[in-house]
Length: 506
Image 1 (tube, rainbow, N blue to C red):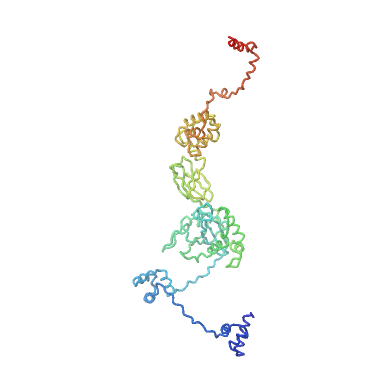
Image 2: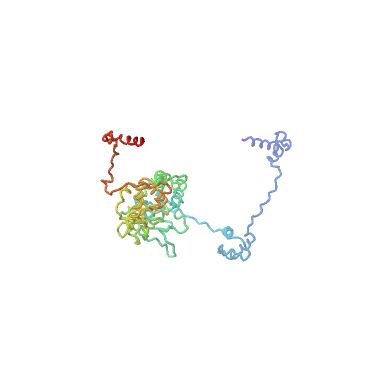
């Protein structure tokens, strides 16, 4: 027994058995009389005041509200609000709805636990995980399929919830299970359910055709009835709680590699919190044999759109632009895309193919398409560059490639640049051409300005050129003029001196 309890028991014994006064007990046990009074129950109790009733803007109208409900119990909150406004009520509808729920609480709905036979159904849904990829302004979505009997799970992340994206993941999910169920249950995603009407549900015809080709029926949940898809809602919550927190990944591929490993090694091999069984074992021994074989008939799962080719030989698809051959400007092509590639077709012929870019606002160009466009420009079929410009290598090639797309005379550019290279030197002229292109321009006038003004160079005399390589490239050694000294008589070498001396003497 704790020490405090022993002291309290002793106080009660001295008071109730021995009959000592509170003062005597306090002196004997060396405690205060207030403590003795508290333990023996004789301490004066403070009066407990009842809490003041909580009031609100609706309180003055309680009687009116009850009278309205007694007269017309089926009145809804907006109708009650309208009548209370006439009586001067200044509050909102939120507290009014809360008060109506307390005044006429309805019976709570009881939900039955749904039971599914092996191979009977699978539930499918998307789950949004926000902008999770660095540098990619697209929302990451988790595609989840859960077999209703075994709770066996398929998980894959995607950057689009389009029809093509859904069908590709449905295909991979069915191959993962190794077959199809009798019915697939979906939430009201637009790629499956177009609308609910009084006559029934209007399904997307493309998805119905896919379901027919794979041999399963389609069922949609009622609007706002999350309990009808609990087999897939629970795994989504499990993914948010157990897989997602603290997860680090570099791109979508890395995310899906980690998700696949988590799904196969942990999620499907754990003891399920509801069934108490391992989903992978139940699937292997009970549900897998009950699935229908997956038909081998191919089904189109690409994203397909029609697009017009712009003047810049581009087509717009999924918030990006992709290049096509320039001969197709003004025509319409069919764009077909999967998760990895974007292809353009003119009739049955594929005219362009690009790797799909999942960023936004990107311009994806094939270098061959640009080169073909340059060939259509005036002067594009000019002869090769002069040897002096060819010696500049990539600088001259890049310079004239850009110049060909403009309106300048390529002949004049060639003549002027050859002249500048002759009077200033090929190396410094190539450097000036590079400086001009870095400033965003091309033009011999700019090159000359850089040479004269920025570099401060002075033109030098150009060597004489005969136009024939066998002559222009001849290089002769400097002559040795000392050989002429041996051919001159000594008398001739001294003659000028005697002449000078004679002049001096005279």
